[in-house]
Length: 480
Image 1 (tube, rainbow, N blue to C red):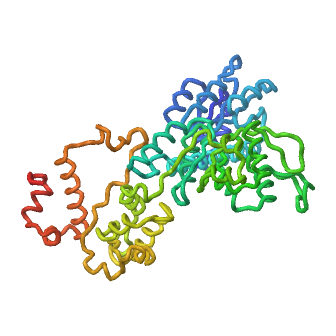
Image 2: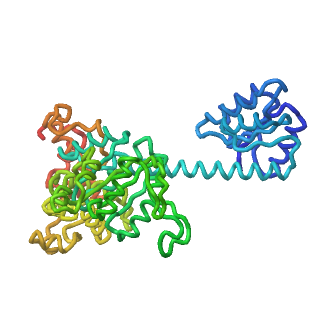
Image 3: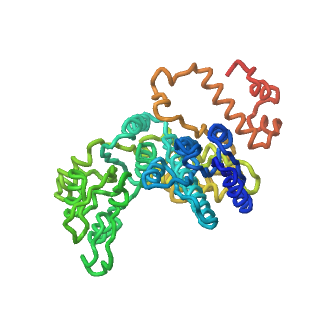
């Protein structure tokens, strides 16, 4: 149950309410004056505070306790009670963040119900805050994987524009991660507590998409049996992500242009404008300039959307990131048969890096998932990869006969944008011997892990003496 801090200058009131709360299974911290209650707020972190508003009949000490309780992390929910009730004091307490206001004398059941409602509210707020933290963690910049030059430029730009209200146009082939970038922009901005609403503009016919985007009034068309709020209204204060924006019809393009220009919408069948405070992030997997030349996309809308263009490179343009992405996709996945993490053979990694990936990162993730599911041991081999991919490369599962060497997967922990040195910059460079030593040590550990810690078996696999293996593991081998 809950930890409740109770403050009232009437001892009988404190005893009565304490007994009630204890019978309901709560832990009670009772006080009859303000100073010790202040100290307990910081040290005990209560879930609920019940405080009298006028503790010495002359000054509203309860408001001080209320403010202090709301400053806690997480804030405590507060119920204010008083025998000197008035509209003014009630409004002041509610403005300061009180959950509810009770005037003495109150009924026992009334207090009990108010406490239950306050705790339910507090739990809902805590769960919402937890889910938002998890969402922000999932869509933090570090989850966008890549150390190639092209991705570093993307990192720099999204880091600079995330906490602005500028309209963003994300361009890139299908599967390059446009929606992930859009979510990262939202959850790392000041709008993160408001909704993020993705809309696939190519998935709905024109008449339904208009109603979905802007809402409709009752009777505006057949089947409109009640008023409906559109997605732009639902996203008020947050972000609307318009995926495949190039597939919008000319009519919807003109409606969207008005939203971007005037920051207002009109429901279908209604002439009353509704102001909306939303940030628009759009995405397209085809060049919009070509659609403008073909007369299927409005040039003025293009310039409204293209305030800050963000071009995502295809996976074949950043092949150096493939090992890092593979490491990210298999990170934390344990083989249920051996309870050990999966690894990738060198032949399999070479094939993954050689493939042209028309489906980009999404296709790579699916290929890794297939390999994790189908591999018989802990190592994803060439034969575990999709057959269509192997055929495209002129390979076959039979090519995996000598597929024994393990590829040393790089760390999937990528620093935040800004902390990542751009490849080629002086801060990214280390002496060659240090680089080689780090790569060799990582590979030795991978082989040892594959051999279950058996150093003799690892030495045979590496074709070195056991003594050499010990020296290299200890960092004593100088000739690297």
